[in-house]
Length: 289
Figure (cartoon, rainbow, N blue to C red):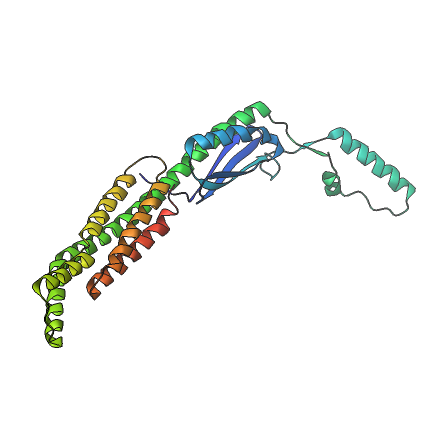
């Protein structure tokens, strides 16, 4: 089943003393190209998560970021103060006030802003790294599910276009005998109008040439074959985008030949419609992994 290269996933987990989260954004790309934005705290995880991506995804440009927030940094927990530093700052402030007349008293909020006054809680780094790896795997799984849902929508859009191409092929097959007969009658009428006589052999040669020039059975057969191959590819697992793109080229080649062999407006219009449907599929296939 097809998988889109466009997707988004975000997973969050609460740890003792902190909250961590992974976020992955994915868009289409010829190859697998991950870009990481990791803080120094988990920088060593990059090779591990990069390898995990290779095992799960084949194509796509990925923007991957890791965030963590200590409890208390946003008011969600208790603040821990460096009491020794607070005492030193208070003593220094009292001494300075005694030397300066009419000095304003120290503002407690200014003390809190002093570097080192608020003590950040220390994390169990090993536990955080293990939790980050597990959460990353969950995030990738969520991304894959998102890409698969979009892939299913793309499959339905492609299938609709395949039905449209098949309908055009049927129309051409049904009209082809009448088209050939009309062309032969037109040729005879033109010869009669010109009042020119051709021997039977020459006339037969002209008829054969006309039939060969307008014979598109082979192109129609190949269109049917390529449609079958596209449907087969859509049922396969893994990366199928490049194969589908190749099949679009083959479909377009047959549509061009069909158009060049057209001898009436009906087949020309059908060939144009087929080419439009192929181009619509090609646009969607650019997003398939």
